Amino acid sequence: MTDPRAPFRFHKTKEEERRKERSHKDVMDEVFDRQTLLTIGKLVNRGLFETVDFSVSTGKVANVFRVSSKEGYRALKIYRIGNAVFRNMPPYLQHELREEVGSNSFGRLVFAWVRREFMALANCHEAGVPVPAPIEYYRNTLLMEFVNEGGFPYPPLFKCRVESPAALLEDVIKAVNSMVTKAGLVHGDLSQYNVLYHEGKIAIIDLGEAVEKSHPMAKGLLLRDAQNFAKYFNKLGVVISPEEMFQRMGGASL
Ligand SMILES: Nc1ncnc2c1ncn2[C@@H]1O[C@H](COP(=O)(O)OP(=O)(O)OP(=O)(O)O)[C@@H](O)[C@H]1O
Ligand SMILES: [Mg+2]
Image 1 (cartoon, protein in one colour):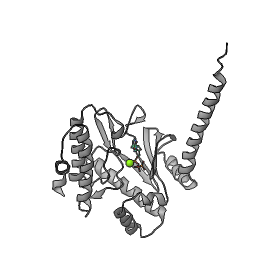
Image 2: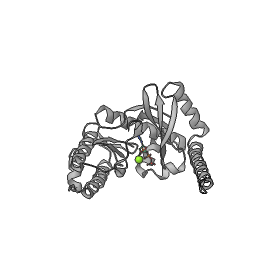
Image 3: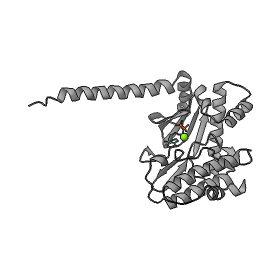
Image 4: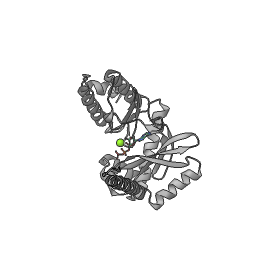
């Protein structure tokens, strides 16, 4: 006998499929405007990757995709161009980018910002800080190592259950300390959202707001980063004060 609920299930599945297709299409339409498609075409023509596989994250500022190249997976971060990006940017950054490009054009400001994140990644990677290795930047796109396990991205720390918080604390301190003392940079937006984690391994991402350690705001930003993480670790039962966190993260060298 046929299940009386079968037609209902059928419709529901179809509707779910349609919804998924719609939301996929929304992401595609919003991110892949004509200019961005041309930009991606350039990267593909240069052999930097062959396919865009799936969306990893849809954020306020950027969308991140997994892409595939002959050498394997890569992460493609596509910054949005528009007012919303600037509303989400700290004032010091807006000001510095305007000075740098000498213009108020959203496009040019975003390109300068992408370059800034690329340079910060390059300095950190060279200094041995666990960040995704940068590969290329072009206009509003940044191509970098895809931090993954079996093709799927490491999740951000806020989604993770951490087996050994004390060991993680040491790893975070070591990474941030080398970012400050070896790469000479303060992240400026460090939180459980911008540290990816998997089985005891970490990667620090999202370096677009980083400043050099000589920057007048460096100390204040590192203090805020230290406060964020001290709070996070205290919640996990590892007691550390923001001051100690700040010092051990390289605050003494600022
Ligand atoms: N190199 C990478 N490898 C794997 N996943 C990544 C990589 N870079 C970014 N991601 C994923 O994309 C998400 C967003 O990246 P990122 O933090 O750099 O962008 P964002 O500008 O902060 O976006 P949002 O507006 O969401 O804050 C990350 O939380 C992570 O899940
Ligand atoms: Mg982020």
